[in-house]
Amino acid sequence: MSGSIGRVNRWGLALVGLVLTVLGGLALARGLGAFGTAGTPIVDGGARGFFARTSPWIWWVVALVALAVALLALWWLLAQARGEPHGPLRVESGPTGVTEVAPGGMAQAVADDVVSGPSVLSARADLVDARGSPSVRLRVVADESAPLYELSRHLSTVVLRHVRDALERDQVPAIARVSLEPSPSPHRVVR
Image (cartoon, rainbow, N blue to C red; front, top):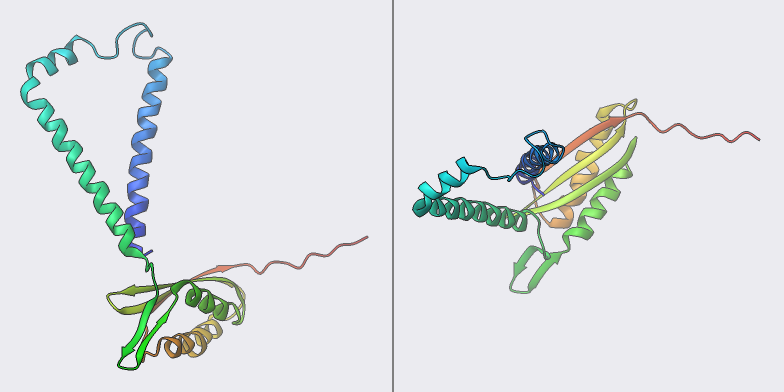
């Protein structure tokens, strides 16, 4: 998933979560009697009067808001569908045939290649095809005590060279996000 789609998802989910939390808190407060007793109607005379006075056009406003929410949801679904490749990536096509790679298998091979490097604790790779130009996104967790130049050299001279060779490209854009963590201490069992 691309960074912009992930960012929109996080903000959208945070906003929906906030609205639902506020509405849930208000409903809980109402049930506990904070806004009157439990026997009183939720919609009072003022609200009923407002809907009666604005009856011809209020429902058009409600319909437009519902349509806007539906279009926003449709845009979100389409953005999700565009974010990740669903089929094989076409590396090359010519008169002798077509060369394709599976993005999941290629991403796993890249992640395994990264983990083979010095002081790498774990890695995850995504292969993204944006309009026929594949790129690689790496999330690497490395030992905080190891020198970063070794990891950088491994990524640039080994991992990305293998990716370029596999995709038969001179250049493949890559983004690597590296998190540093302490090395797991060896466990000793004393009996």
